[in-house]
Image 1: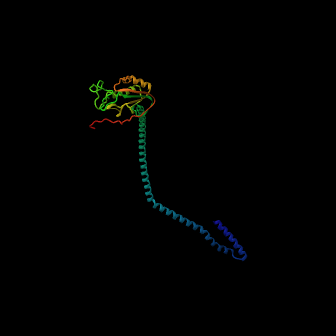
Image 2: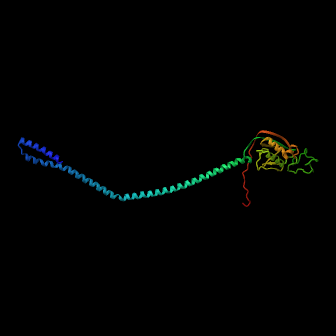
Image 3: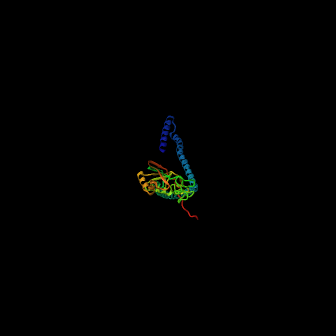
Length: 301
């Protein structure tokens, strides 16, 4: 800045000298009168610098005051954030423990499910093996159809008819073996003979048997109730149709090779005659009507 002022003064001096030479003015006086005009040029930058420094100082002081005044508020915010962080950390820890417990429960449930599935497959296999013996499914295939009829019709009271029971015949009036009223007569097929004929077919490896359209299972009873034969609690009457699914030749050999079948073939089975024997290429026997099993309980229970 000083070098610039000197240049201005030198230039101004030259102008004064030139003017003095022309007008005859004193150069020294003109120079002295020109010097005070340069002083305000040097004071302006200094004043601006001072004003700027004061402004910066005021701003810094205000910032310092603001910083000191906001410290408690910041402390409260920091404390709240710390408490929130600790609370969320506790929640995360609790949820992590719950997740581990649930994973253990899920693993245990999966293991139990695998065991249950294995048990179910075992049970399904056992059921498939037992269903044919339990007559739980319809049976189809070649087999044998046998019709057995009573030797004679029963009277109104269950006694033998006059054509088959007379004074000189068994079952006639006053003769031993006379039928009891309300019971089957001697000219009718007995339930135990029917059971023997069915057992002969089972011995011939029959896969399924029906008597009078009723499918037999391992627990199907054949018995007499009054004047009727009951098969699985279903009454049947003459002609008694027996159908069996199996190898026809093997069934025939077993049936007529049995004691009851041999007597039936020879017409010596009391109260029954052989109606017809038919070899069937295809038989369809229905499933048995199975009753749900019940547990026996004591009367005190």
